[in-house]
Length: 143
Image (cartoon, rainbow, N blue to C red; front, side, top):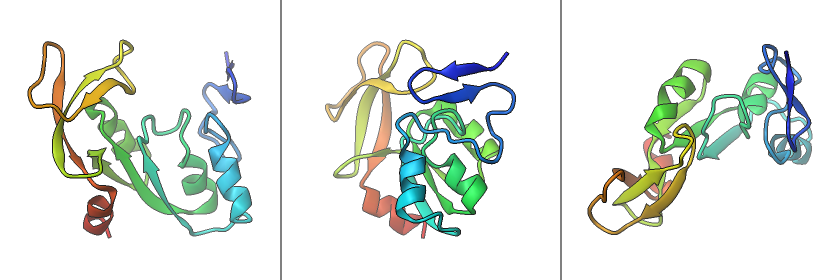
């Protein structure tokens, strides 16, 4: 049975990734489409891309408007599904003002998001260490 996702008026279910479906939580995909007057063939950069479809700010632009783009995601658990289900380039990194290794803890749900990110050295119990790069460096590396 399809379910409405609270707060964004979209149906979650078997037909969620269908042409004409909007996915973002706050209407970001509709706003971009409106600002660019339904332009086809644009380019997006999706920071903290997370799920390939559910609450995605870029999936509709990619699927319905033939945009190309870059999905940047730091959570290792989401990279494979982004690469499998999306046509965009996928980069597994965190974004920071400077290149660094950062320590983070994953949220309790274990699928999306982080509870805490710190540039302090060393990982406490349950924490992970991952590289972070400046956005400009990621864009240069991914043309």
